[in-house]
Length: 360
Image (cartoon, rainbow, N blue to C red; front, side, top):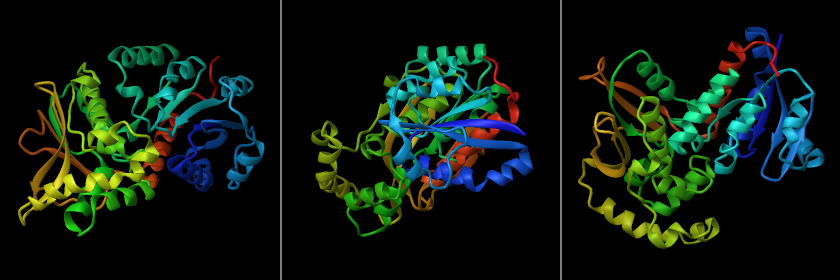
């Protein structure tokens, strides 16, 4: 039986759902894959819990009672005692944590992340991290960086590594904004109401401005651009920000208290739609011209993007083999369940391929 120790950062919507999914599937992994997954470490921004027995279904009570003040080396000190495969899972949106991935790798951790920031920091950071992973023979999986559980990152990577020239990737990159503009275009409801609903349902980032600013989609574009072999920085992306200037620098609480200020400008754009049109938030990656664009656009209702429902993501990939008829990937592009399941898939991908013992 291959034993895998999981150290989870982030206990919010996605993190807590991942714990539930791992515990519910424990028997399946043992019988089908010969893998024993143990969540031996939990951490939020303030507290940390380590347990060699692994957490159970009452992990919240366990964390509340036994967690201690988080120290920088808490997971490292604990992991050094046990010679098991160790996987650090980042279910946060923390820039600070993403900058510690090289340190995690130095301490022998494979990394699985839903956090897009590490892959969209400077090109030097991106390249250096991969050099270190190769040196340490460790894995870095991040399928959930784009499209939640949809296999878009692997598809782009596999095409590129097979020598396929990728021309463009277009579509609705954000299931969160897909949900928001699907509802806003079709229902007689204020924009702010839809955003708050999306936040409560776990579709948006903890701060919805990360989605509304276009930054989240821009990061996804940059992730795919780099998977396609381009050397680009975040500042190379043209981004339309849907958050009015006076709310861009407000605190999160201030933004949520005044979010109704977004209603008028968005309602104006909605009122200009023709009967056969809807609003869609689109990302466009032109690899030939190295051009990345994020914007809110008007599309026909009967177009592929216009027909989307709910929080579906939609990606069109144009390449040498798919020049006239694009490769299309479509499905749930946001939500705690699909994102957590994507993280779990990445965990199993590593668990099935790495040696039983970690070399230290």
